[in-house]
Length: 148
Image (cartoon, rainbow, N blue to C red; front, side):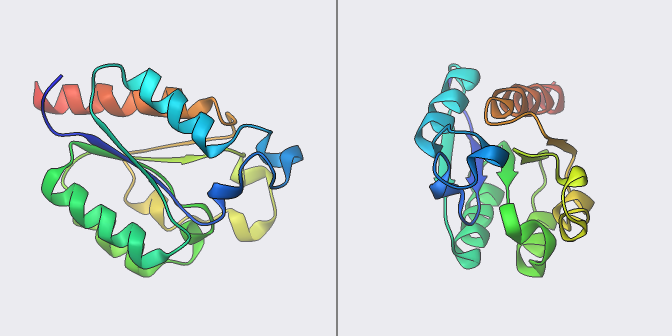
């Protein structure tokens, strides 16, 4: 399928999936999550990225503003503190899905108030690593609905 890609952006420490707190995040690696996302997207083009650096995520949002059909973002710890990421996402004209592997509302209070949720079209949380597939399909549906 030709056309603008969806951007799947992953924030700090998600490169450690499979090793980091498996009781919360499971044993699935980020490479496996990328494969799950690409399979869920089918023919739809995907740009999949992860960074521990806030500025890099902001730069990828800027790329999506110019070249993307939608954004799926797991901002990780930046969800709760990053004004630059929030401001960049505010500029994105398409649908944004915020995804969290764990249910952030069942965790410590610090995880309950995502800034990104203020601009997200939809928020999914607590479905584990395989929940990315649901988020990808939902985002593609939103892009299709938007494009008529």
